[in-house]
Image (cartoon, rainbow, N blue to C red; front, side):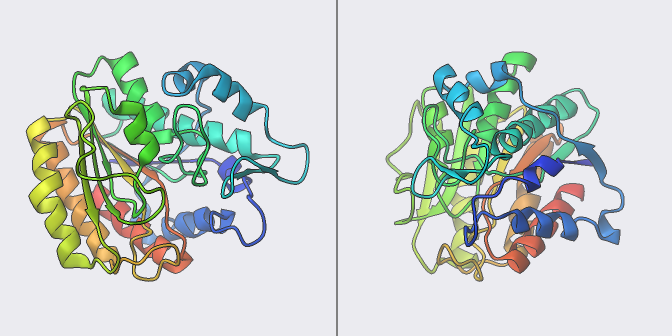
Length: 306
């Protein structure tokens, strides 16, 4: 059974006119998941993340600053790309809370897999800095929650967003219980993710050039990333599901299609079945062409259901 976690507050976070990380992104994803093929989805309203959960991966002063930085009206700019509107703090709490609730559900056998259709995204947020449209690092909050509350010894994060998840890597670079595996375009924002970045032996990066298409993308996962995930034998697999490697996406230059995301999701499900009782929690990251995002997220969710 696949659970879908989301919350209306995630639609209220609005970085302003013309910003690529718009509420329309989540509207497109939810519309795509409201069709007959997804009638069996177990739809859950995301709870708020606790301050305790946030502070496992973020500095307490940073958490307090984000929670108090939403403006009464208008916008507040945190960096060149990352802005807060009046509803942003609540949206960020629900986005991170979706992942912790999903982790609890799959580890208590209430669901085998979950997809968190939330925003703002999270994988660029470091322990002390908002960046790349991200406020709290949702997938990292969920991973730390799994370690602290469920006593896992090994868990993995697979990140296929076209932009490197620098925040997730930074947070877990010294944590051998967490394997971070990422494919991403390079060179591209944020400029991290080289093959030499190995942390405590728990980071594996597959940087790929502009123009990368399905064959090279799939080969990178088959030859480099999936074998490391399989050898690590994770007890839980988390996914940073960014769909901005699609050929239609305006913020990168890869040439993937929805079928490529379905293929990789199926391969990740195989890893989870082999080592984690099938347990996967996926959370939405990037994807900025609305039609491509909707099709890719639907393909991803369908593969998680299968």
